[in-house]
Image (tube, rainbow, N blue to C red; front, top):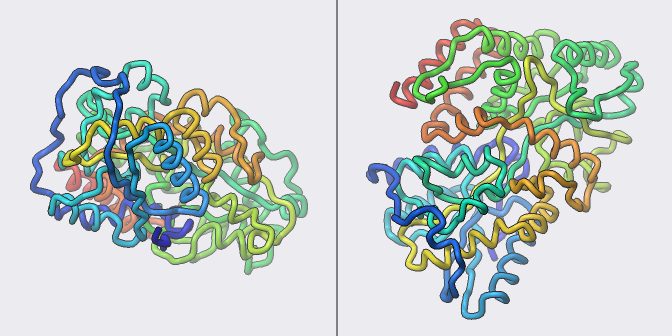
Length: 449
């Protein structure tokens, strides 16, 4: 297997989607999704499968690589005569490679895709329609928001393999020094924006000028994570029918004014910007900030005794909330290429990947979150900081249907680029009104409104 070059910080930045944006134009000639035919569930009953297929993915961590290797081994043992070739590609250029393969008719049978990019592949009509392979009971086993993330026009174009989301890690010592008492340990007790502001102000007062209360994970293509504040304020990026921008709005102005104050009040480092090379976990690890918003997949890095956080005991709490609680949709789906010569085997391996046992083992190995109802309702046996993962698991329940629908529209990669460009300006002195109008203009152009 090749060694992946993707980093956890790269995943945190959400740069997968950005890469897809640049290369999908190569296969833009296909008009739209093409259903393979067959009623839902008509091929759900397993038939004997044989043959060979290739599954391409970028390796995010040793835990992911081990997880996929174990699933391959068990699938081949249960299905004699099958061979799954794992093709681990570097993150850089992953989607360019996939798209070249689609254009040249040499694409892998299956490949991994992040939720912010799947809409683009669906709209180009290059994915295997797996609707006939899943019964109603099987589709209803997923948390609805995640199953919806792989469906379009009532057809399924992949499987939601896992998810990740954002929560807050913090230094217990810094909180004690700042006189911060009880920290929310239940989702329903998450700080309001006002309470979070009080915490940030206390930290600001207790820290030297060279240090800052917290850092946020909106770097690079992770800019879309700013939208969590928009959703918390009761707003949205798009209209309910996803055909128009929902900006400007009072909720968006409130969210932008609140997040701009992070810089004017010196609650975040000046270089905790959208277009920077320093990620939120870096600020926590080097103890520039005693509190940071991070993705759950970074927990092993923070917890590493040799190279992780060296500032003493740390713990985890929930994102703040305003009108409601909300967090970002992270994670990946597995999709099939519609040109595969063995769709039955491709579908069988996809179903095996998202079986309860396989998903549980993979998520525990990779420190990621499941998308099946049964697993989301229980605490998995995470080997590293299960107390922290318990918070992320609860936080993931705030990924609403609106968040999923907007994050998976075909134009989201372009919308993400607009957010990067305009938020960089808006968070640093641009007026909220002009920033929101510019974002709305970019969204309008992206979706063709």
